[in-house]
Amino acid sequence: MEALERRVAVDSVTSEKYLRVASISIAFYEYILTLPAEWRFYRSQSSIFHISLACALFILIRYVSIMAIVISNYGFFSTAYTLPTCQNYYLVAPAFKAIQTMISQAILGIRTFNIARRDRRIGITLLLLYLFSISAEWFSDLFHRTPVVVDGNCTSANTGKVLSTWFYYLAVMMYDIVMVTISTVYLLRYDPLSSRVERLIRVLIYDGIGYFIVLSAANILNLILYHTTNIETQSAGASIGYAVTWIMSQRILINIRGMLEPDAQRLENVIVARPTLTAQKKVMSGLRSQFESKSHSKGSGSAKSPIDAEFRPKSPRNSNDMELDIRVRVERSVVVDYVDQSEHSSSWVK
Image (cartoon, rainbow, N blue to C red; front, top):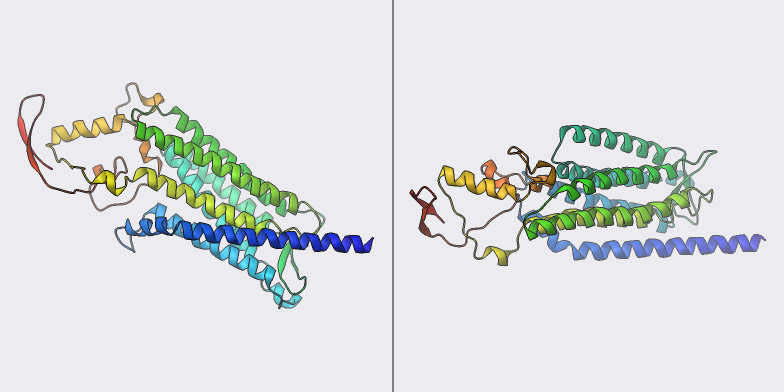
């Protein structure tokens, strides 16, 4: 009987090693794969001291996740820890896990707030939900934690009469459900009048649902593991959770940026017109009308443009440049004459 239990324990440790190695490999591949996207994020910033919110969140989720994976797996694969030294280390990985989750949930929350047209009541509700969620997650993640040393490694486990760490993953899933539901409902209300906006909305919907499905699978695995009393295998799925949270969160930012910023080939023949004030109002009004939702299509001249629904970059230029969150590069300058409907000629510089 003892031999059987020992064999099961050995198999569990071996499986955990495979899971951790797989998560490290996936994370490393993702990092290499997204290096060009990271460079594009940096290059699009006006200054290193004046970066956009999307870029700041991208940097945070990327490098906090790397730290979480490194710290967690260093403790597991190390062979030099003793119980006294592990006492000073075992809470570091859970703390980085909670910080990573805070950043990931901030990305999802800001995304939802922007898709909901930055409605103040929705914003307050989302903020309260975010604060309640992270408070519950920090408490459940660190409560009744104990160091575990096996063959010189150092991990943490949840012990006590009441196991609480599994509630951490339940709280994360509940938050994700609310955010994805709200954003999807608002996206389905939009009535796009151009194929490009239709593609953008479709990408946003698929990103949100994909984020929820993939993260829920990793969270359910960890919820099941932490719901058991075997302290040696509770953290087996932790590294997978770090990698999946990192990949799905940064993919949301990368996909949004890719949809909102045309590639260089599309910009080669773009001409920017600077009309008179009357003509400029007509143009901006026409551009806004492409993004009106069904609920604001009648008699709503002051409705906000739903393309504001994703991380608007800050710019020193005037506010009209940010109306559609699309950047335009001038390849050539041409002067032509334009005649409006009132047959008054006005000079446009292109």
